[in-house]
Amino acid sequence: MMSLRETMLRGREARACRPWPRHVVDHSVWLRAARELGKGRGDMLGLWSDGAEVHMAILDHETSQIGLLSIDCPEGRFPSVAHLHPPAMRLERAIGDIYGLAAQGLPDRRRWLDHGRWGLRHPGRSSENSEPSGDAYAFLPAEGAPLHQIPVGPVHAGIIEPGHFRFSANGETVVRLEERLGYVHKGIERLMAGATLERAARLAGRVSGDSTVAYALAFARAVEAALEMEVPRRAVWLRALMAELERLANHFGDIGAICNDASFSLMHAHCGVMREHILRAAQVCFGHRLMMDRIVPGGVAADLSEEGVEALRAFLKTAERLVPNFVRLYGDTTSLQDRTVGAGFVRPELARQYACGGFVGRASGRAFDARRLPGYAPYDELNFKFGASTTGDVDGRIWVRFDEIRASLPLIEQILDRLPSGEIRAEASSCGETREGAALVEGFRGDIFVWAKLGASGVVERCHLRDPSWFQWPLLEAAIEGNIVADFPLCNKSFNCSYSGHDL
Image (cartoon, rainbow, N blue to C red; front, side, top):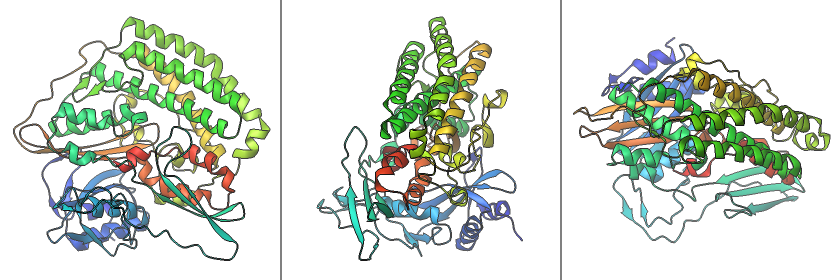
């Protein structure tokens, strides 16, 4: 029997793509790969188009190697992966919206990102003008005498992004949740086309503001892979420092917000203070609270001063004193546990099928972390542990976040103790030929995949950035079934999927 890896290698090797090869295959090989994914022999890391071809990134379970497949679409269509592997469903709908390429056999043909208000169809390829009057959208039926529907959003109370949730409920119990996203589509892939590396790096850092470091790092690594650049060692370690600060800030903020949704405002206040400590330390260290635009192709744009080291040492001292108290406070508050234990359960097999990353996947037993596999520097020289909880519910996702906080604090200490000296940036210059690069980086929410195609002049010809939320949003729909409507804010916040990163 042919392995998934052997299947990926069947076909013509395309333009050199680094660090993982890309092969152009025919329909039969494309469908064979989809079937292997459907059997659970690999993870789909991304599915996207450049208007002429459709590409798929796959992690082979047998060899733990990553490969890219491409299929030509001269007639504007390609075989659907989703009819064999459901996680591809929304990605294929998005490809249809932006590029007008039809996935043959796609079970759900409704438009996904295109709500009929752009004023044109298929903006990525042969666009056509259209009336921006809005499309009707048929939600999936859930019928029966006691059932009623509850529409929520796209505009929500509080400062969150827009997204629509359609609940079908039997009394207080949710029978079905269907999401509708795409309200913050920004046309990132179109904006990337023709951008200089400097502008493209700034765009990447704005795909999802809470993950600006992770996105900038993923884009930079893809570009550096394409150009075969060697990044100064000090810059590599400073990037990891920024990534861990971003991870901590988000985990503290989200744990507090989850507890606040259960009316436990004390934890919200404590976590808010810790998050503020981190953001102020980041300002001192790198001149920006979110560290936006501090990671660039070739290195970093800001060095760490002695004042910054002192700010981080002071933060670590505070965190080491307070975090154990927060863990006890959460664990000992039974009224809070009553809301989180058992709520929003994600089945392990579903997490594996969707290659669900980050704390959502880890809490359901999928122990994947891009810092370990495929791995990248300097994490191969650092010691850190995964979260231990695998209960799959809101409680489990909180405990995984606590575990990741307890892992990131010593990581920062290791980086400060062993930070190399030297340059912080190498010049990223064009190489006179078209190149491609890809990267997989672990953000706080999960793994971020980036593929970039650079022209001979050094500008970006095409770039695709895949947020981990693409494989987490569908699981939220499954997690809420059987829960009461009032627990949705808890479940939703325990996922904290990105609207902006998904909508691109």
